[in-house]
Image (tube, rainbow, N blue to C red; front, side):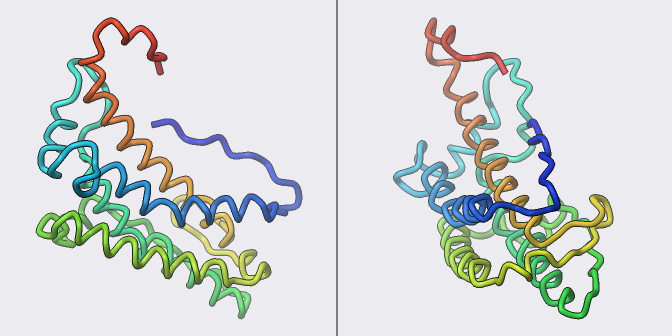
Length: 202
């Protein structure tokens, strides 16, 4: 999956509209995720059928199928706190005293196994994700602009501001939603016959 190209923002002044757009994406992700993978309204009935179909995929596809749609849903719930909310809180709180908290990387695949997510129903995962995300977005929207300038230091990425993390959060959501959509597309594409010519190569 391609990475977005970082854009230079003069004097680190992030437009208000950009932050609001990021928060809007973050707030809408649970509904989009449910539409793609959840319940009787999902594209395929039964999460096992959906994951199995995606893993089988199109012959010759190079798409990474180590995670099916179910695992992406598990991952989004798992990192909600440790990769995002916890980090934003630490950066915002530490910034009051002029400190810069040190943020360590995590191992997402290992966390999915240790967290026991596979033992829970998809509906349970989606429901918890929706509830937590709604509360998290409300808190993010309550932060004063000055708090978003507080900085932390990541062990791989280096120094970042709270507002950078919020923008990354939105990009992270979109990356994984695109991962699910592309996997579903690759699964259905072999059945379009000659109409495949209308698909763009990417």
